[in-house]
Amino acid sequence: MSQGRELNKAELLAVLDWYRAAGVDLAVGEDPVDRFAQPAPAPSAAQLLRQAAAAPAQPPPPAAAAITGDPAEARRLAASASTLDELKKVLEAYDGCSLKFRATQLVFADGNPEAEIMLIGEAPGAEEDRQGKPFVGRSGQLLDRMLGAIGLDRTKVYIVNTVPWRPPGNRTPTPEEMELCLPFLNRQVELVAPKLVMTLGGPAMQTVFKTTAGIIKMRGRWQDVAIGTHQVGALPTLHPAYLLRNPAAKQQAWSDLLSLKVKMDELGLG
Ligand code: URA
Image 1 (spheres, rainbow, N blue to C red):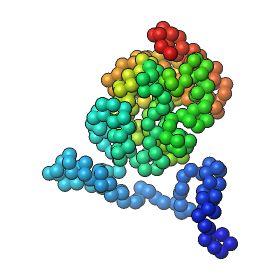
Image 2: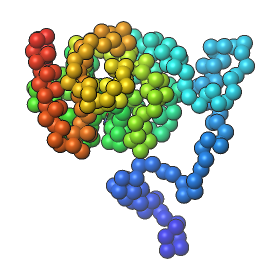
Image 3: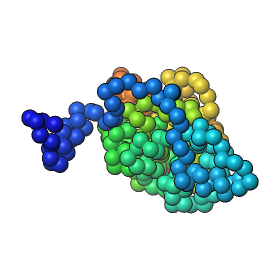
Image 4: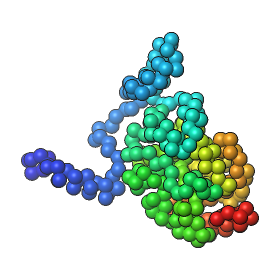
């Protein structure tokens, strides 16, 4: 309401646009809500159908069991995809990870699916959520400049995130969200079969290297890792968003990029 009258559509859109420009990207109410005290949402029709198909003789599980997906189901669905297109369709239909319901759209990947170098980031941010592509915001622009410095661009790399939906308010994905999305990341890596992987930032490094160690300690150290069934040399480096906040750390990222370039030259890539 404004001056005692309802806002018209154009005015409402202008207000929304103003909120977005001011950085408001999450709608919350004015009164506190105890979400733990609320009943679990009823399972979706797709979840009920899947449950019925999987266990026709069983009574449906209590609603609480449907809040988060089942990692075994995520693994089965991911394994069922034999191409990247199929995997994208599987993810578009997947309702097991609640991040999906707060995001605008799936952010599957960008770059060249035939690339020999794969970059793994953390999670889409606001701009990625809007455009449906990873690393297209400010940190993506810095990433492009970093790649350019060693002769790479998006035609020569394939870029994904550990989770393909934007966490609300850009928070770090929870361990449960990462666990549910991991089979899809693993399958994506298996299907692209890169010769080298570079992880960007702590959460991606911890997921790929299966460690709780910190990124400052781990960055710059190559290791052979198994991502799904794909064995590959992987290098952790700092996240471009961290570099934007800590420009002095660009020196370390530059040293990691040079290390990637040396490895590419050794393997005749790039
Ligand atoms: N940060 C990430 O980790 N991934 C993106 O896609 C964008 C920002």
